[in-house]
Image (cartoon, rainbow, N blue to C red; front, top):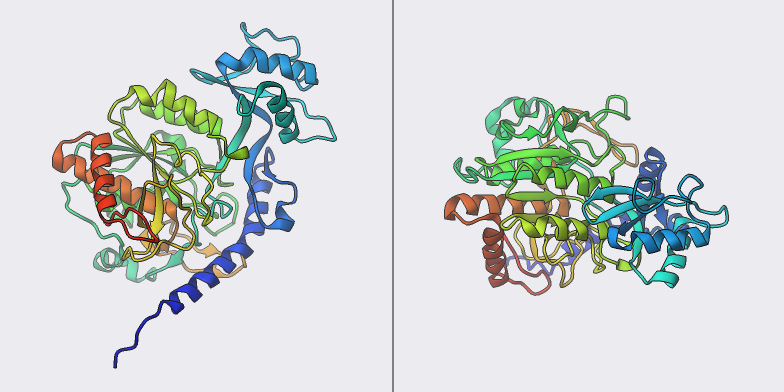
Length: 442
């Protein structure tokens, strides 16, 4: 008699994976914070609690340009403006760092007994919640658990010399060569590893935006791949498997620490829009103070994206297994992507979820291109990932599946990215599964 699978094995495996990630949280977060000394985790007790509400840039605030005069007045009265800005006028310079139209960044002075969130508490009481916000730091470290696992080898370096073995290992597999033809995709990530197409030929033609967008995968670990090295290359490779004909350009905005500030992200995306991408794919994001929508990304939408009809913005939903909104994926104008198992029968244990997540795509054990370096895990074990092909899990990798599907549909139907995305979301809703949600398959 055939054995009945009651699902207990899968649940036990999920529980073990959750515990492994819980143990990763503190050392990986501490390493990231050590690499970027301007970034802070909140609350102060995050190490003891093993929980981070959000990350932010210390002594830095964002506000809309229309609110800048009253924010400056309030900061002056609080004694929270740096001495060199205390007398600055709103116009003529010195009143803040203009990011894009509609929003500016301000330096603030924080008393020894306070932290930047305390300044925001004071501003909330005077001006209302959300008039000024943190300059949040978005991240691909395990506090957003994106990626949800560390890269694992799937073939040996010797096997990687056989193109057939490499192609057989890929998941999703390489599709129709014409899929995605004449579609432009911008990937905002860690950059592109130079020469990766030598062992991952499906990436041939994927380009860094500039020389500055080329990633060095071994900047801090002396002979081993850095913690998030290859992330942008892997994401680009997934898109290219589903849409081999797409023109993919990689923007390096996420640094070796895994952090990217709201201010630099929106400026990078604003610049990328000048190159007329059809799809922007971003496998990073973050939580915000009091769950207030990201001010920087909302300004980007209002001032630029909303005026460019037809562009699709696709973003990862995050990997904490939480329902709290994760930005920018939670915006209504963004396609927020959660993760499910390859067969779509269950939502991934790590995937964030809720009404704000638009669609779920496979995000477990995705196989694609990586750096040709070994990898040292958080607990010190060495994995031989030098074949340059690994499996990796996270909403980071469900996201390029959706981006690739949109690109493939565009070349097939002639629709723009926005309409192709809407059509795919309608198809996903028709494949709704209780306990998962709307589903798309490669």
